Image 1 (cartoon, rainbow, N blue to C red):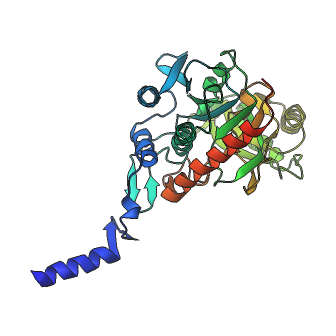
Image 2: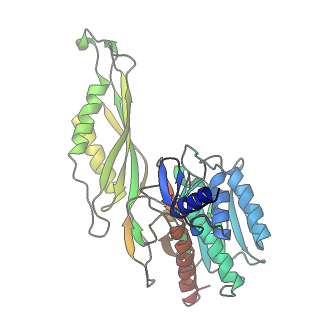
Image 3: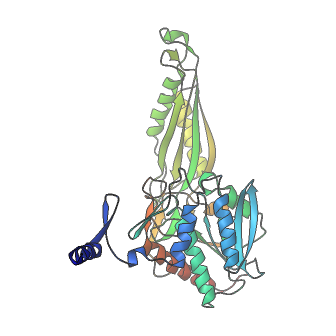
Length: 377
């Protein structure tokens, strides 16, 4: 019995296994804290875009219990933004914000040593939890007071940003807005813009044994896509290359039928030029390649610069889009958060506990910097 106890203790001190992965054992690696508990509560609740209510309800109660005044702003049925501030002053100098929706599918929270896995751990519930704790700690230490800072958590960022779009109807403005997204704890200098497109091909159906009786829409679409791949899109020194991705192709009804219709959808990550200029270029090249092709565009946003006038941070330019351009105003715009975008939207989404903890300090630093600037309100 004594020997078994010694052997088990030695083994436990060396390592423990979760699944097929071995991690160093440490009481610190499984520690709990208000930050980790909050993050866990957020990740455990599914909030795929369009179904954010579980997290919205939780946050409303959590923030009220923490002493905030909480407002909800309807965006659609059972979909609300949350605005939280101290006491009765809803107009504040600084706004700290992120989104609570995630991409599908949901997969549950899991601790693996000093890593936290699950949908939304990185994008963007890590930012949400760190932002809340940062503001709470600053308030408890009397580093901020009523009228200094508010929290805003929106729905729908992953699909068009209706939540942030509705924020413009609140009748509020701020000197600085701190946006939370995965930046690997680096302060963003900006991010690329975006442009969505659909190429439609119209042909004529017929029997595949008699191709002369029809017009093959897929053949037309392929010609257009081949021409599109040869286009030189404008970039810039700061934001890099403009890139293009065709993400979906669909057409036809059967292998022995000449397809009457086909389409392709894709997007451009805009690093230079203007959205209108890039639209004109794409439209001209594609439609000149085949007269049956038509190009339609769903949105267009140019590169988005952000502020980075804060010492002590590495800086980065990001290739993904955010809610930043959807919020109107003359405020300074900061973009920062824990985790890597390369982990987000994946089947291996996770972040380190230490990154989550460091993000709290990063947000505190950004809030304090913003409040140290001369007031413009």
